[in-house]
Length: 103
Image (cartoon, rainbow, N blue to C red; front, top):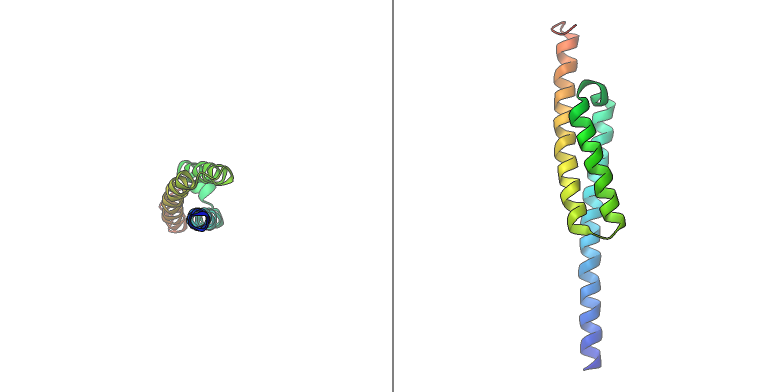
């Protein structure tokens, strides 16, 4: 009986560690998206979308630090989505500027 509860405890720990890895990976991906967006000046060209992505990223990091892996995953997903929007919009606006369509 003792071996069974030790095995069950180990299984739970492995599952929790796996959740933490997925959340950590998602937060890292969101961070890389922010860097990519910043590289095309999304903070200037798409400030709303960039700021939204950044705030979601900060919250994802906070939730990860508190070991709330499901919330960290959700905020990382939102950050990644907003970061993608910021990147696309910044590229679109930069292209318009380069073509002289925007002052």
